Image (cartoon, rainbow, N blue to C red; front, side):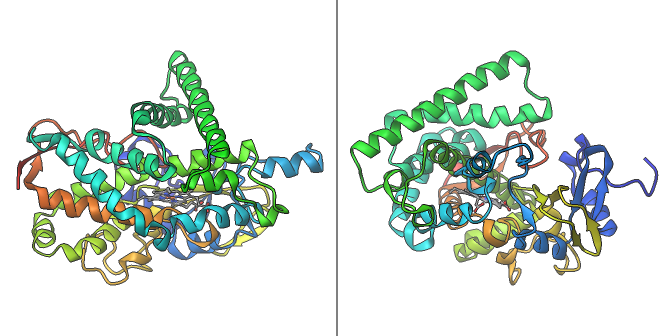
Length: 408
Ligand code: HEM
């Protein structure tokens, strides 16, 4: 590569060590990456601009309305999937689910999250060693979803297997899944879809006080009072689940890694757990679980002084914005006392700002409160960690994180 070649964030090296590359991306400003036919957006100001202009940049990245009748185009917009819809449909979906996931909506849920976390720690605390992702962070995110939806405990193993398969199938986009395995994963995805729809049908017939019942039965004023149709319900459920699993898992694992890399910070948190919420924010800033997502330009636009044509795809780098020295003092430093850490871009910005942020923050806070209270002398398991990251340009997180500890 020549010195002034456009920095390419879609390489294998970029997965392991993205930050020097992000620096070069920010230096270059907005640019077109020819190999991938995508426009790279990485400076804080530019990322905020794109995220806050949903009128100019669409989340329906794959939707090409050409050749569709008006009815077909209208139907194709009704995805029910918050991250894959635009206003006005997006606004109606958000009003439906938003109150349940707000701080106030979640309040009654907090004791359950605490019980789930303690229950998971109970299962490995006598072993003295744990692979954090498999035995703690992943089941935590699945159990929280199960609780939210009012799914019975007996279904947890099935739901966990389906979630694992869904995560694995995402690797297909990066050529990481063989053809035979992909067929298995697709069959598993179909089974999961049928399970969720059957569960929804069950709630329609026997309503309860849970989020799933609300999603199935509440009329949508924005759509003339109709209810979610099947495609929308499926889109809503799958994105609520997938939005909250790998992301939260990596927040916990990367947070633990950051503490083990900065033992003086770990000691501070143990001495004063009231610092945990700000530590969680700072961990999200420096190791953003969602590194980037895409938008499509609805019209000719200008971003950071660069003209971007209608129809262009843009890759928006939350992670690069979160370390932009034009916005953050000493951006590469991990500072759990940082003022304003909470105003990072790890949850996005604008109308698509993560609907699960209050829940993720609650899970992160309680997870570290309980892990630090119950496990003493946490350290890496000797020889068991290679610190490699999952093969994914969107989601950043370790493949494994093995820890040793004593009971506190
Ligand atoms: C640390 C954990 C999390 C991180 C880093 C994260 C990150 C993000 C980001 C960056 C976006 C913005 C997408 C965009 O700009 O288009 C987003 C949206 C979203 N997240 Fe999260 N998320 C987390 C946890 C959760 C949880 C727990 C849930 C489940 C309730 C969830 C569900 C969603 C959904 C449904 C959206 C789409 C919102 C919309 O488009 O209106 N996320 N998340």
